[in-house]
Image 1 (cartoon, rainbow, N blue to C red):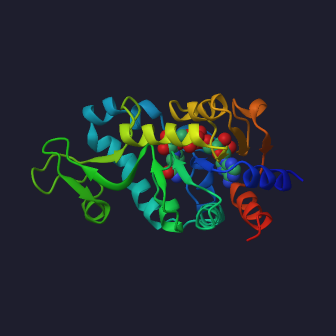
Image 2: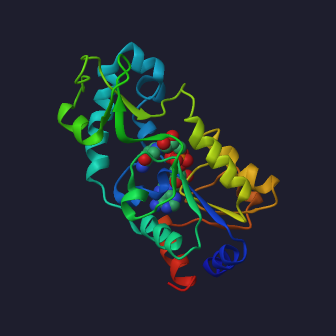
Length: 243
Ligand code: NAD
C-alpha cells in the first residue's frame, strides 16, 4: 500500500531529488552513526570525528579512520544504491544528494551525486595542500604521510567543526528547492545543515517522502513515510514504477 503511494508521488511530482544518509549503506555492511549499533555508540565523535581532535592528534584520529577506509573500499553497493541508479537512468530521479562518504552511489552507477560531507575519494595534505587519490592513500595507512612533505594527510571528508564544501551544499539547496518531491532514504535528519533540506523543499511547495527505519523530526510533514529497509523499499519502488 505505502509503496504504491510512494510510487504515485514520485511519478506525479517530478523532478524527484533523493537525499540519502548512512541508512542506505548499512545493508552493504557499513554501520551507521546513530542506531544503537552505530559507530558513535562505540566512539566519542568529539574524540575521533572533530577537526580539533585531528589537529591535536592526527595519528589517533587515523586509528579510527584507517580500518573504516579499508572497510568502505571493500563494501559493495546494495539494492538501495542500485535502484536509485536505475531510477536516474529512467529519468525518474534527477540527482542524489548524499551525506555518505563511501562512494557507493557512484559505484552503483548514479551519475549526478552531490557529496555534501566529502568522500574517501582522496585525502589532502594540511601542510602543502597536495591532494592524494584513495588508491595512493591505502598503501600509506594506518597513518598516511604526505608523499611530498611528510605531514599526516587529512581525509577529504567533513569533520565535526568544519564547514561543508560550499559548492556541494549550494547545489543541494538548489536541488531541494527545485524538487517536486524530496525522497529521503536512510537518514535520521539530525545533522544540520543537511537536515534543513526538507524544509527548503516544503517551503518551495514540494512534497516530502521518507524511507527510514526509526523516526525523523520531519515524519509529521511527509506525504508518505515508510519505516522499513531502504534496500527492499527502493527496489520495490523501482519495480512499482515499471522496472
Ligand atoms: P544516521 O546514522 O544519523 O541515520 C541513519 C538512519 O538510517 C537511522 O535513523 C537508522 O535507523 C536508519 N537506518 C539504518 N539502516 C537502515 C536501513 N537498512 N534501511 C532504512 N533505514 C535504515 O545517519 P545520517 O542521517 O546519514 O547522519 C549523518 C552522518 O552520518 C553524516 O555525517 C554521514 O557522513 C555519516 N555517515 C556516513 C556513512 C557512510 O558513508 N556510509 C556511515 C556512517 C555515518
